[in-house]
Length: 148
Image (tube, rainbow, N blue to C red; front, side, top):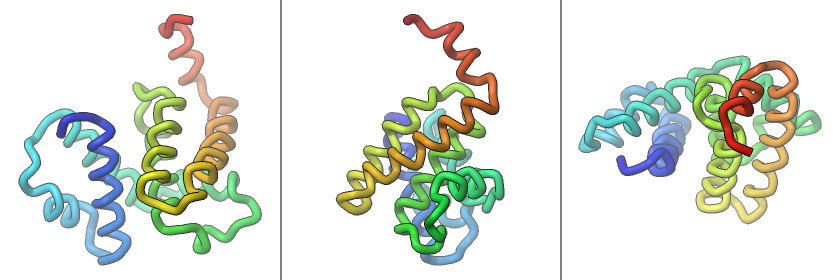
């Protein structure tokens, strides 16, 4: 894989396959990416798929808080997968700034989901991000090393 962006696109495909087939994430990952060269971005993709597909209650709880008046079963499937991927990055990938994760999720939503999905995903992730920034010190650590 050439970049993290392409790794995110492949992760979206894998997670969509998991959702449609009900097969385990590792089986879908192996089937879809059987010819992919093992590298750092493929490892990122695998880890992202594992976290986002795990049914992690913390991930869904963060999303649920942000979509207060919506039943999560009514969300577009691709939007929900993209949101789970992004919140997984927030929780488990300390080296990725929130802003990068949000921008990448918006681009995925615009490209692969509905016309309104980019704005919807942006709004939800902005709310989740705001709550997470209050709870953790990750951003404070990044601010100390990022130039202004």
